[in-house]
Length: 147
Image 1 (cartoon, rainbow, N blue to C red):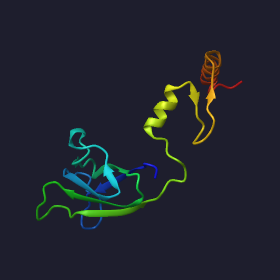
Image 2 (tube, rainbow, N blue to C red):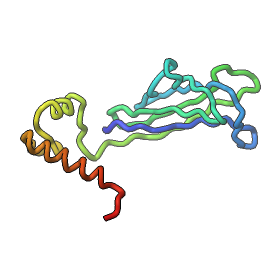
Image 3 (cartoon, one colour):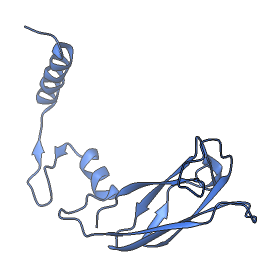
Image 4 (cartoon, helix red, strand yellow):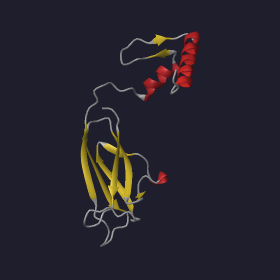
Protein backbone atom coordinates (compact mmCIF):
# COMPACT_ATOMS: atom_id res chain seq x y z
CA UNK A 1 0.00 0.00 0.00
CA UNK A 2 1.39 3.35 -0.95
CA UNK A 3 1.05 6.07 1.62
CA UNK A 4 -1.27 8.65 0.16
CA UNK A 5 -2.43 12.03 1.33
CA UNK A 6 -5.91 13.43 1.10
CA UNK A 7 -7.34 16.82 2.01
CA UNK A 8 -10.67 16.70 3.81
CA UNK A 9 -12.45 20.04 4.15
CA UNK A 10 -15.17 20.63 6.74
CA UNK A 11 -17.45 23.55 5.92
CA UNK A 12 -19.75 25.24 8.42
CA UNK A 13 -23.15 25.71 6.78
CA UNK A 14 -26.55 27.07 7.73
CA UNK A 15 -29.82 25.13 7.56
CA UNK A 16 -30.11 25.86 3.83
CA UNK A 17 -26.63 24.51 3.07
CA UNK A 18 -25.00 27.90 2.52
CA UNK A 19 -21.44 28.15 3.81
CA UNK A 20 -21.21 30.50 6.79
CA UNK A 21 -18.16 32.48 5.70
CA UNK A 22 -17.97 34.42 8.98
CA UNK A 23 -18.04 31.34 11.23
CA UNK A 24 -15.33 31.32 13.90
CA UNK A 25 -15.61 27.80 15.33
CA UNK A 26 -12.73 25.39 15.91
CA UNK A 27 -13.22 22.01 14.25
CA UNK A 28 -11.95 18.83 15.91
CA UNK A 29 -11.24 15.96 13.53
CA UNK A 30 -11.06 12.27 14.45
CA UNK A 31 -10.01 9.42 12.18
CA UNK A 32 -10.96 5.75 12.45
CA UNK A 33 -9.58 2.91 10.38
CA UNK A 34 -6.53 2.89 8.12
CA UNK A 35 -5.67 6.58 8.24
CA UNK A 36 -4.25 9.28 10.48
CA UNK A 37 -4.23 13.06 10.75
CA UNK A 38 -1.02 14.78 9.70
CA UNK A 39 -0.13 17.26 12.43
CA UNK A 40 -1.67 18.17 15.77
CA UNK A 41 -2.52 21.18 17.91
CA UNK A 42 1.12 22.34 17.95
CA UNK A 43 0.80 23.34 14.27
CA UNK A 44 -2.92 24.22 14.47
CA UNK A 45 -3.86 21.16 12.39
CA UNK A 46 -6.27 19.62 14.90
CA UNK A 47 -8.32 21.31 16.22
CA UNK A 48 -8.43 23.56 13.18
CA UNK A 49 -9.82 27.10 13.19
CA UNK A 50 -12.51 27.77 10.59
CA UNK A 51 -11.35 30.31 8.01
CA UNK A 52 -13.86 31.77 5.55
CA UNK A 53 -16.26 28.97 6.48
CA UNK A 54 -13.85 26.08 5.87
CA UNK A 55 -11.45 23.98 7.92
CA UNK A 56 -9.13 21.64 5.99
CA UNK A 57 -7.20 18.70 7.43
CA UNK A 58 -4.60 16.41 5.85
CA UNK A 59 -5.22 12.67 6.15
CA UNK A 60 -2.49 10.09 5.47
CA UNK A 61 -3.37 6.46 4.80
CA UNK A 62 -1.54 3.64 6.52
CA UNK A 63 0.28 0.93 4.60
CA UNK A 64 -2.75 -1.35 5.01
CA UNK A 65 -5.61 -0.88 2.53
CA UNK A 66 -9.01 -0.37 4.12
CA UNK A 67 -11.76 1.98 5.21
CA UNK A 68 -10.99 5.42 6.61
CA UNK A 69 -13.68 7.38 8.45
CA UNK A 70 -13.13 11.08 9.22
CA UNK A 71 -15.45 12.85 11.66
CA UNK A 72 -15.59 16.63 12.15
CA UNK A 73 -17.27 18.39 15.08
CA UNK A 74 -17.02 21.80 16.68
CA UNK A 75 -14.68 22.02 19.65
CA UNK A 76 -17.18 23.71 21.96
CA UNK A 77 -20.58 22.12 21.38
CA UNK A 78 -23.82 23.79 22.32
CA UNK A 79 -27.50 23.82 21.41
CA UNK A 80 -26.95 26.13 18.40
CA UNK A 81 -23.57 24.69 17.35
CA UNK A 82 -23.18 23.06 13.93
CA UNK A 83 -23.88 19.33 13.90
CA UNK A 84 -21.01 16.86 13.49
CA UNK A 85 -20.39 15.33 10.08
CA UNK A 86 -18.44 12.34 8.81
CA UNK A 87 -17.13 10.99 5.54
CA UNK A 88 -15.94 7.49 4.80
CA UNK A 89 -13.70 6.32 1.97
CA UNK A 90 -11.42 3.39 1.24
CA UNK A 91 -7.73 3.13 0.40
CA UNK A 92 -6.59 0.51 -2.10
CA UNK A 93 -3.34 -1.42 -2.57
CA UNK A 94 -0.62 0.26 -4.63
CA UNK A 95 0.16 -1.09 -8.09
CA UNK A 96 3.90 -0.50 -7.70
CA UNK A 97 6.45 -1.46 -5.06
CA UNK A 98 7.16 1.09 -2.34
CA UNK A 99 10.51 2.77 -1.83
CA UNK A 100 11.01 2.80 1.93
CA UNK A 101 13.00 5.53 3.57
CA UNK A 102 15.82 3.14 4.47
CA UNK A 103 16.02 1.95 0.86
CA UNK A 104 15.99 5.49 -0.50
CA UNK A 105 18.74 6.60 1.86
CA UNK A 106 20.83 3.57 0.94
CA UNK A 107 20.44 4.33 -2.76
CA UNK A 108 21.22 8.02 -2.32
CA UNK A 109 24.15 7.28 -0.05
CA UNK A 110 25.78 4.99 -2.61
CA UNK A 111 27.15 6.09 -5.94
CA UNK A 112 24.42 4.24 -7.81
CA UNK A 113 21.08 5.29 -9.19
CA UNK A 114 18.25 2.77 -9.13
CA UNK A 115 15.48 2.95 -11.68
CA UNK A 116 13.09 0.66 -9.81
CA UNK A 117 12.73 -2.51 -7.80
CA UNK A 118 15.10 -5.18 -9.03
CA UNK A 119 16.68 -2.89 -11.65
CA UNK A 120 20.46 -2.88 -11.95
CA UNK A 121 22.24 0.11 -10.46
CA UNK A 122 23.99 2.52 -12.80
CA UNK A 123 27.29 3.74 -11.40
CA UNK A 124 28.34 7.18 -12.64
CA UNK A 125 31.86 8.54 -12.52
CA UNK A 126 32.50 12.02 -11.15
CA UNK A 127 33.06 13.28 -14.71
CA UNK A 128 29.69 11.84 -15.85
CA UNK A 129 27.94 13.44 -12.85
CA UNK A 130 29.53 16.81 -13.67
CA UNK A 131 28.48 16.50 -17.32
CA UNK A 132 24.90 15.75 -16.26
CA UNK A 133 24.87 18.78 -13.95
CA UNK A 134 26.20 21.02 -16.73
CA UNK A 135 23.50 19.74 -19.10
CA UNK A 136 20.73 20.32 -16.54
CA UNK A 137 22.04 23.83 -15.86
CA UNK A 138 22.06 24.56 -19.62
CA UNK A 139 18.47 23.29 -19.98
CA UNK A 140 17.30 25.38 -17.02
CA UNK A 141 18.99 28.49 -18.43
CA UNK A 142 17.38 28.00 -21.84
CA UNK A 143 13.94 27.08 -20.49
CA UNK A 144 11.26 29.36 -21.89
CA UNK A 145 13.53 31.17 -24.34
CA UNK A 146 12.79 30.93 -28.03
CA UNK A 147 15.54 30.06 -30.49
